[in-house]
Length: 313
Image (cartoon, rainbow, N blue to C red; front, side, top):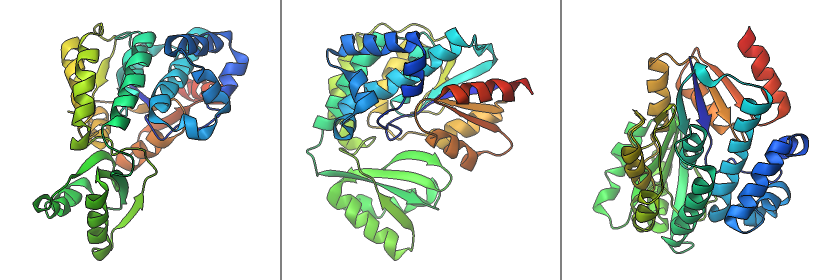
């Protein structure tokens, strides 16, 4: 039994998908479709940069979707990959939109629009420099929750944004609150790394962005997905379109419960976790969270051929 995983922000890199773009007309058509829908050359940003423009979240989000969707279609159309072996699809943050597109719940064009708007809304929710995120390493999320209780008496926001894996938790909030929390971590001799982000994602500061996106998501047509989508907010599988819409709105300001999602999928029989998109971040998170499972990261032709050979064994 298998699960298909789709990465989120942070996996982007200039040149992602170039191997497939050069070799498959199908991918060229997908990139062109993205250009036309967004009304600017996102394909050029993906393939050539510049990096600073690709890193803008309004560009990053549709760019990652475009690459993940391209890889999925190459697997499906060019390699005749059988997706019947998959029990779940799951995406990390914006990757949830990739999962929904690839499971025929929403159209590629609608997802491009929503992610571009989502990126703008999330960036505009907090002035640049007023929000920060840090990665806290080597400590479980419940221990971090206990430490955060000390901060709740202070003004400002400081919350768990991503529970990624055992020993990798992201905290998000006001810059001053994050600095204060980081001081507490140092006193406790807990390692942390500041993240280069343009806004404090997945915390209460993103509620204005969720408000902006609410009508846009509600007015978009969603179908029942062909596969169960393990959502970020509850870490449970879902296939009801109206529930999925509500969860996508809540996801903007809620914790990404990725570690729990992986554990639940594993407990429900998933042995193969296959990541489709740029980078290998999700594969690393899975390996840190559950044992005795197979992990594959697919973002090139060689990766696809290796996957096919491995699953034949």
